Image (cartoon, rainbow, N blue to C red; front, side, top):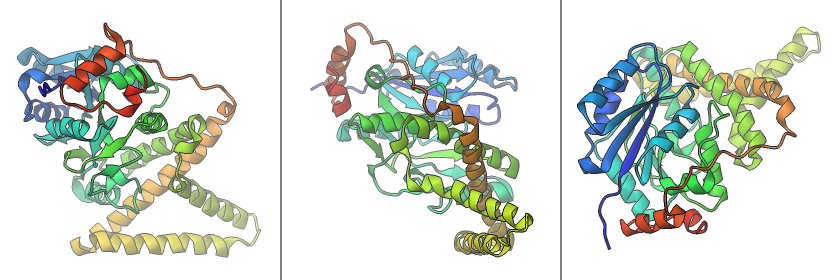
Length: 368
């Protein structure tokens, strides 16, 4: 069996990442993976802060690097443009705010080879900066903060979704590309389609990467507000993708907000509103103390604020999304476009894929 390393195309969606993109690209180019089996596709979304110039400089110095344009500026269109432009049999996503470990690509390919998964990735390891930025990193790494396994998982297992991701190119021929409507949560939606079709999504903690999280209350709140808002569209498209934990923040925000408004109107609900908010606040302070009190009182309080920011912003965003997308519940949903197969079609690609020692995912073998 030919076990030569497959060509991996690293797709990096980026817009206004001048502070981080050089470190991101350097980490990709420094991979412990055969140089001739790696390419980098930088997809720029009309950056106006110097990001594109940095990207072009790398492309001029290294023939493995290309820069392509994303006129719509959002991540799902960037990923689809990059995948269409990619030459590799394996597609790996790396975000501009992220640095990957030197063995990340090699371990990802080995994990695909060993497990036969349709997507593999590692946990998100946030990197803060400053008092509140460090607090956000702590909160995002906590089961209480977000709840998804890829934020805190330490053992390999099948999961709903992973951070970033690596896929066989043929998967996009079979199941379609990213859903370009979803400004946020497009990875959740794709991973749901994979699992619905019988494919596996595997998290391997050995695939290490470091994500630069938002470091201000405003930016953190905006990010999680958008996650909550666009989760409504995922709910409308794929109701079974949702978990009970997705509904906890909006239910809490709606309950406290509704009881407070009723109390102001004289309905006598001030006590229940106070009890609910107080119970949540006590829980937040207690859990923040476990995570951060050893770093001092200010870190403890900042971590509590980070938890509240994440939960409330997500919950408010979800409630706003219910109104914003209220007219779409009964609309038929268009499927994301399929990636055009290469010459010879999916069957030929799978044959080549398996010839490199990779076990083709079941979802792909069903399509030929």
